[in-house]
Image (tube, rainbow, N blue to C red; front, top):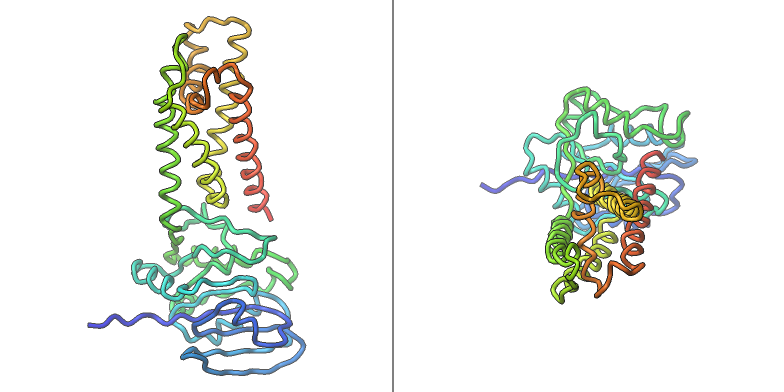
Length: 338
């Protein structure tokens, strides 16, 4: 029996659009309702390439009112909320339908969408997971795809007091999700691209391999860096830079690399202090505090070149990584509060 795919409909909230070019800019090629808040009232409907479009010019203000007007007129099985500064990839309709098909119990799915507005970059989750009260506050409305029947069954709508053009200029997205969670709706976050999962794993594996390859010579008075150790160290630094760029919006990567890099700097500083003041390395407490973290985090750099332990590069490279990681971490925290 042929599977019947649920119809997707995009609900766009925008303002002061003079023509229909918005549809092309957003790369919309599915059914859509566009609520254009402007200074006149009018309605226009048309069919293009098998997709039904409804365009409403409404003399009103407030993003909550805009989204509610779209909800009232919605006819699709799955509704995707949209702002006018997003651009969809070509196969977005199939991706959304497939995710709902895989998750039969899902009533609402939060998708990874990159905004064209550089002033509001979106941090993208690393894995598919269920959304609860403790992890739902970071999602914007334009990431929400929801089953129409579920919304209407639970009588959920957007607040008219919160959001752009309202008394309080933000928060309508969090309030909407709050109501969904209160009604025990099944909410999930979509998985990210698999290639980024692999990049994360490869970086960790090379870190471990490089640490194992370089640890013997770093902790041996007569030891010298080997060619294999050098290859591992250079490979790790290269893959770390690539991963840090590609995963710069990934919360999990930012948290993990920030913690590891800060711990590395702290362990280096503690070890330098212990060496300077000739504290007994056999003292178990000092070994736990400084030398063990040092041994776990620092040998990865040991193959850069012969005699590295006496070189300022030994300190400059992890310090540079720590600075980059800190900048990404601070940027992420600031974004979450705006």
